[in-house]
Image (cartoon, rainbow, N blue to C red):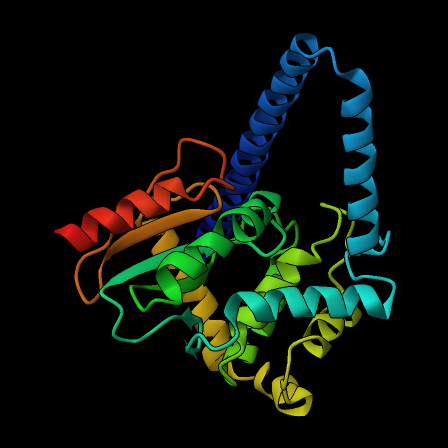
Length: 276
């Protein structure tokens, strides 16, 4: 690769990160404005205070109060593992795909494991999508990587390969879900080898020795590069981004206009394709 091509690639990555951060900032500002309006409309200040305190307590308990995202207590870790098992246990997995190989509809989900909006989609929208479409054999979801929120390209590559290495044992989605559930503070540099090992240790039945060895498989690095090229070909500028269509056929972009935690945009697209 020439120095010009390298500079262009670095600029593209930087532009994507900046666009993704701008999108997140806009969503955060919109959410803040909505909170102000709701506060003005309500007279139940005490109730609101109690709810806020309860939410804060839940967040502290589930995260273990750790900036790195990994729960501090064994009980909190077990809680996350149990929750994720309830979501996807028993659903067929193959590599980066979750769902029946004969599902009539395929959704491709392009994400960055450090992206907070991807976390919002994964923890907010996906649970009901899993239950309604994936577990019933109607939808297959493929996870693809796209660098937006992660600052360092090598860190991005390392974390995505770690997820795909779990896919060598058909457990990639356990790794992906655990990462998003225990995502750390953005730009805090929390993704270290210790963090990745911690995520892997929470994946039920994962052979850690094989997982460690598989992370050196050049095929997985090629998969990350292929994902990046696909994202560029489709003109994606932020994460999460989606393609959807009939399995085995052409896939089209799927845009969301509401909060990523709202599964309605996926539900409507799947229903339309099934009817067609």
